[in-house]
Structure formats: structure tokens, C-alpha cells
Length: 499
Ligand code: NAD
Image (cartoon, rainbow, N blue to C red; front, side, top):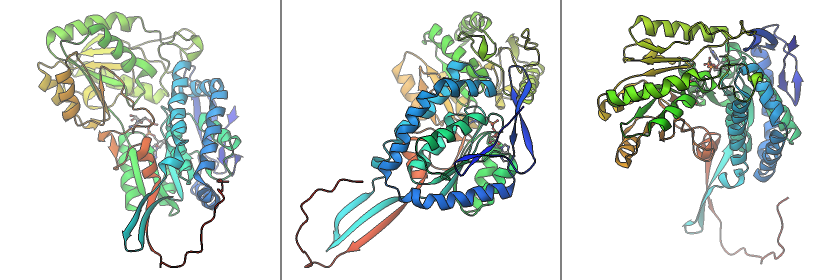
């Protein structure tokens, strides 16, 4: 069995704590590797080494840092197939979906190539007599990212690319469920020219996270994962005086107006509800049709589409719609919530219980489920299921549908399907949710915009990627300068290029 490692000082380093976690192949249920869980002293040593490496990296000019990102882009594209395979093997998602995971991270690396422009400060010429004033964006020092299992390529890249481009050293604590791709990305960054020690990948669990929270050298923490852990890290990190942004769970509603194109809406719900086995923070888990006729029409369109879904391991071809969920515990949690839906009176229209795949009986596969007549007091409505389970909540009016999404504690993403511009505008303007789709079911913003939820889906005041990430990973210093006049010695006329 493979023993994975950390990536410290520019190379793979064996774990020293004697503690390990199992890494499964979710399709077969077998343990395929063990990943070391770092102790506090291993984390502290990695942070100290990163602090030494950061000094020269922070002083490297932004263009040179951006060139490392440029080469990183090339290397990721070169190794795309290898990365996607490793990702699918540990996560369980299909190969096209794994490539999408890498691609959406890669786009943020591409955005970071613009770091020299993004890091430009502000300048006021002649703020007073002989006085100029300027602001600089400077790196924070050592910063850390703690990331979830469901996007093991994309979210580490969302964190490390801006942090490194700003001149910080970065400690990545990836999910212990699928740690191979983050290690491969660290190797690619080294190959791209990143100096040793500037990026450290420390595998671990709560002990490693707590060590990062307690380490005074760590200036900022970016977290993505479930809401209870997001709240824990946010409060403890802030109390320790760190800059913290934490992105949590979700329960994304899609409102379907009576004038929507029903085929388009049903197709959108299939991809957004069941893609990646529902293990996406931007998955649609609640469909809210307005009016019983819309609800009935939607069910009629959804059922045959759901029955056609191909649930299989990623190795079964590119027509697989989704694969297994990540662990047996995740599967058990989904099954428990499905049972609660039945017990609490929702109507199970498509029953995915007991799904088995020949040859993969021990895999963590979950068949697709569709509930109708779900009400807001049910656990399947209130809780994040993170599985292939779509709940339909019927609303009588647009205002009622809007209020469901508004009143839910999560506020990551939402969508409305309609042909009416007035309704769409009203929805986008009034909804208290961070990312809104209009006839777009999964409105993940592109790299040059920012990504972040509201309410219990996001803690902290800046979003991920886009210009916000450059604000999060830098601090502003403002200089006021006065120079006495009368000391001019004449000009220099040759034009010196930046080296
Ligand atoms: P998780 O909260 O279990 O784990 C996330 C990270 O926190 C991992 O690195 C894990 O090792 C660490 N961790 C787990 N328990 C901890 C503890 N007690 N103390 C300290 N650290 C701990 O989340 P997950 O299951 O890996 O990911 C799925 C969740 O992430 C879902 O809730 C999903 O909605 C959310 N998510 C949110 C976004 C977003 O941008 N809002 C994006 C992707 C995933």
C-alpha cells in the first residue's frame, strides 16, 4: 500500500508522527494509500522554514513571481491527464469532472499572472507642498490554506496561486481524503521555479489545523469546508489576531417560474443536482417550482432523465454521469437523511436506495433520489445532504419561492429559471445570497470575479479569487514623503529595463 508524504522544503517528506489516515478508492471501497497526519511540531517546523524562505520570495519582483505561475500553467496542462486520473481515483468523480476541477483552479493561476498589475499601489502626486503620498500592497508573510475533499485541485489552487503571487509563503493543509493531487501540484510548482520552502504541503487532521491556528507566525488562514468547522476556524483564528476567511456549506435553491423553458430547467437540474454525486458546494439541492402545474410538469420531465443516469466508476467510460461518494461515512449520512425525509412525510418520487453495482458492491455508490412535497421543517430541507438527492419544495407564488431561499440559513448560490427579465432582475437584486444564476444553474464566477457565499456559507469580508484574493493576501502600507527642493543634479537619459 502506498504511503503518502508531506511536501516540505521542496521535496516529499515522510510523516514523523506515527499517525495516518486511510485514503480510499471510493469505487471499490478499498484502502489504497495511507496519508500521514502531521503533529504540532511538524507543522511548526514547516511554518518556520516557510518564514525563512518567504523573505527572498517576498522581495522577488512581481513579474518574476508571475513567470513562475505562467510556467505552472504550462505544466498543469502538460500533466492534465495524470492529475485527473489521480483525482478521480481518490475522489471518485468522473474524468471529465476531474479535468473541470483542475481547469477551474488553473484559471485562477492564469488570473494570477496579472499579479504585477494587481499589486500596483496608489499614488498621489503633490498631496501637499513638496509632499507625495503612496500606498503599497505588501505580502503578509506566512499564510495557510485548509481545503475540503470535494475539489482537491481547484480549491488548493484558488488559495495558493494568489497567496504566492503576492509574495507570501503558503502552507497548504489539504483534505486527508484525497491528498495526492495537492502533492502533485506542489511538485509542479517546484518544477515551475518556485523556490524550496515557499510552498509547504502538510497533511493532517484537527491537530495540524489547530497547530496552524496557534502558530503566531501564520498571519492569515483561508478555509473551505463544512460550516461547523468554518465557524470554529473563523472564531479561533480571529481571536488569535489572524486575518481569516472561511467558506462553509450550502443549500442552493433553484426557482422555476411558470414561464421557464421546462426542458432547459430539467436538464439544468439534472447536472446541478446529481453531477459529482451532489458533492459540490454549488450543487442545486432544492428545486422550487412556482405553482402546482409547474411542479407537476417538472417532475414529469425530471423522472425519465434521472432514470437514465449512469452511476458507475470513472473507469467505466466518459458517459458516466456520476461516481461514488467519498467515504462510507458520507454514504451512511446520505442514507440516514433520505430515511428521515421518508419518515417526516416527503414523497420519494425516485428511490435510489439499495443501489448496487456488479463488481463494485463495496464501493460508496448512492443511487439518485428525488423528493417531492418537501417542507421547510424537514431535515432533508434544513441540512446539507452533499449527495445525489434533489428535494422539490412547492411554492404558490414568486414571493413565497423567494422567501424560501431568503430564509434558509445558507447563502452560497441560487438560480432562477424564467423568460421574464423583470422577475430575474428583481430576484438578483433582492436575494440575500452571494452567487446568483439567471437561467444558469451553477453560477460559479470566473477567476477574475470573486467567489463567496453569504449567511452561514461565508465568514469574513473578502471573497476567494479575483481582486479580493489580492486584497486578502496583502496588507496596505501608505507612505507620505516630503522632499526638500533645490537638489536637482540633472537627468539620466538611458532607459534601464527591469531585470
Ligand atoms: P470538512 O469541514 O470536513 O473538512 C474541511 C477541512 O477541514 C479539511 O482539510 C479537514 O481536514 C479539516 N477539518 C475537518 N474537521 C476538522 C476539525 N474538527 N478541526 C479542524 N479542522 C478540521 O469538509 P469536507 O467534508 O472536506 O468538504 C465538504 C464541505 O465543504 C461541504 O460542507 C461543502 O459545502 C463545503 N464546501 C464549501 C465551499 C465554498 O466555497 N463555500 C466549496 C467547497 C466545499
